[in-house]
Length: 233
Image 1 (tube, helix red, strand yellow):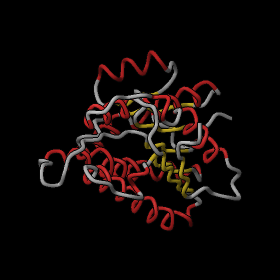
Image 2: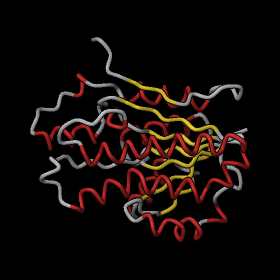
Image 3: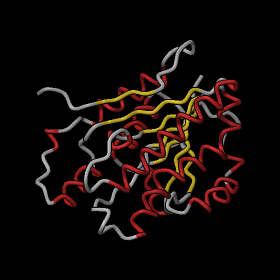
Image 4: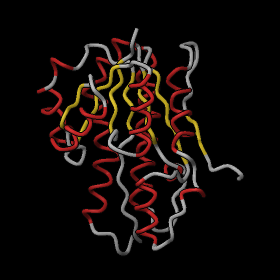
């Protein structure tokens, strides 16, 4: 029987690839899109999927957006995969307040709100919540303060949720990829003023392999935290 997965960030990068893999094996996808134009692209790319227009940059509107699509979202959700994210680098002395607010909204508050709203459906499936975190969720480096703060917060969210939901049979996993060759990594290099060479970084397929391993793990175990680092080439 096909599983149902709710995915954020399916428009590009790791989220796009994990959606492709799950769609190819016949699972049903519920994809969150930030705009009607992005939603149309996702419907074309993933025929048969449910696409909900819900802007993660405005977490206070997510309840309304999901409520409007309540009838088409299955009553049981096997997994929520939080793969969306934004990054804006800069020193603490220079980052404006909107850079903090936007990263905290998309990277932390929105995942918390999406999880809260859909948690009854995940409980019904004894399912899983998987957070695509970052190496920045474990260590903060210069110029990365706001992004790292949002990802450290995401780790805290996952850790608390894991204990809270154990009695409901819900598994919670955090994946911590190092630098991965995605459009976000290209953007990071542009912000750093560095030349981007994707061959230096993790192939997104390797991170997706880790995600699928966590999702497909037999029910007698859970991968709670998994770090994926660039290997020796």
